[in-house]
Length: 241
Image (tube, rainbow, N blue to C red; front, side, top):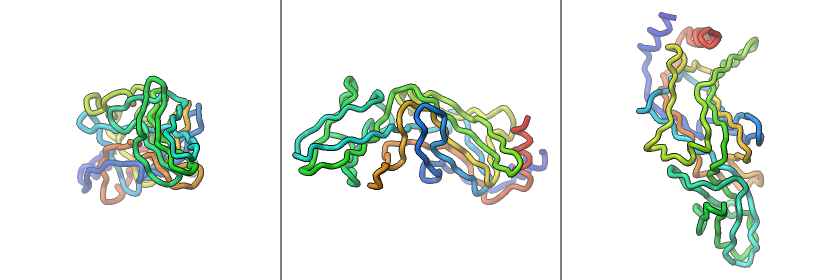
């Protein structure tokens, strides 16, 4: 343990922010706790903790609609409590595979938004920030042929986070139960999990290539230039305790 901590202290590291493009993303299973993003560490990682290293989190719900195709303004109603989010766009829409950005107008009281439809019928792929209660977790995992250790590093209610101004009320990691709690060794997984009543998608099911440009998933970290000898077994033992 002491040797591993010494090697960690001597390792060359750089600050980084882990984001959606570094995670393997997946859609959730509505109403049950399911993986929505997994990152496999290619070198040793240390998650940065404390208020000075804020997390940034916003996970949009997905819903689709179809325009009338007559060029008129159309109003659509989303199912799961469209909230006013201070940190990102409340709603972004695509017409088929063409990005439109924010809709023409948004009504949070009625959970509705209005778009100016084109002269042909299109699918309105909609990514919106919901105020519904939803459990969000970050976990680390040691995949192994014999055993698989998993540890919860963070848990929060997305309904509260989506409504809060994260610049003023930052979310952050507190990983002080052991010196190794904030570390991941090569090939370990950092997973975002969600239990939400709504559908989360990172692209649409129709193959139009849309994406939730209003999603935030930023985890501050330090990345080493290589593997740290003995770190995997030291973390596994630490998680077992």
